[in-house]
Length: 471
Ligand SMILES: Nc1ncnc2c1ncn2[C@@H]1O[C@H](COP(=O)(O)OP(=O)(O)OP(=O)(O)O)[C@@H](O)[C@H]1O
Ligand SMILES: [Mg+2]
Image (tube, rainbow, N blue to C red; front, side):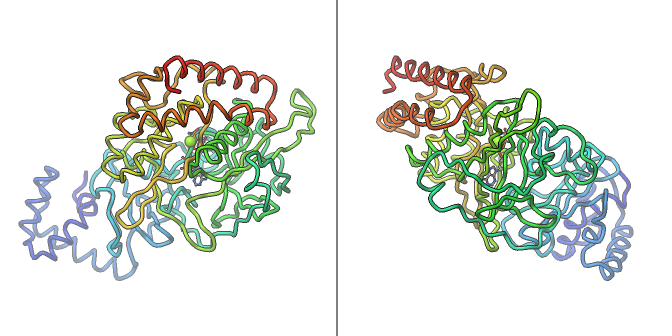
């Protein structure tokens, strides 16, 4: 690394030492002990003088450098400069907070050999990521990050300037029925929604959401009667998970399970509804309706609140690709350090529910925490699916291993969760799912094969639970 580069990276530290009245020789010693590179006192002095001159002409060097493919990315929190990530010529990263930022510093500033996970986790995955890569013309995450807007939570790289659009449900549809299949005008071009073309290149700006997650989705604005794509620099108030033909009826399954969690078990869940979109095209899909899932953003509250929220992966310093690597033991140990006992119980209930309904996808990006001042609390439950009905996913019971296993018996999982929940509570949850799943299955317009698979899954799981005397 060049000495000038090193000085740039350690600028915050140097400033702080100067304020604390350390001599340049002392600063030189500290830099040497941290990096093994000797920068003399005179060079430090010159650096500080030239930096002062530079600062006179730009509010913050990083802000003025924020252009396409910049070496420094400015991250904004609620529209105000929050932190900076610099990529050096030698490919390492330096993360620092804005001088004026006075809030909590959750993530350590300094040198990173990769993009700090809490920033990397803001990027999308799957088809959404591929479309972003194509539209920007690179796979380099450092460059892709510069194109994020309206990311999960409060941190983003493109300041969003407008208010959060008002979100109002059709009264009566969502609140009173668990099915809530809506007839809403879709003001979104067909080619953008068409699942068959989701993976094909669009020219120009990507239309798929830049939010995290692997399933194809759009950032949308729901006005109560109409759903439209988010405009540039506009906050979205909802996410639309587009029907994904790879996993048939997945959206209907998610809507059903979140509804069951909410209405039968009292979970606080992300509010969702389904839009059924008749397919009129020719071909093997002709006449087959598509089901899109709309979920209201719980990290936005009109007219102007944007909540600070982090996926658990970010807080545990795991990147997107490591989302299946944290075990249940690690997750609970970590959460114990952040959450109050009542919230730990809710997390344990979430894991219990997931097991009862065959959700093998409860990984560290499918749990998120709000952060307000210094306090963390779980966000509403989201992304609950049944993975056991899809042949490519059916093997695993768990996304986060327990005792190093992802296929697990009721005794093992409820033995572990028994540390947080009483036998009576577990018994009640299992009994409630057993007593209600038929009702939910019958009320959802599943394709016959999906319905049969779900029926078979629940019959099988419930009988295993009964044999294990769970209820
Ligand atoms: N209702 C919501 N409000 C705000 N943010 C949400 C909401 N639902 C999901 N998110 C955010 O968007 C991300 C992706 O959503 P979700 O997990 O539902 O999609 P997915 O693509 O199915 O994920 P996966 O990759 O686990 O399959 C979540 O990890 C979370 O950060
Ligand atoms: Mg998810």
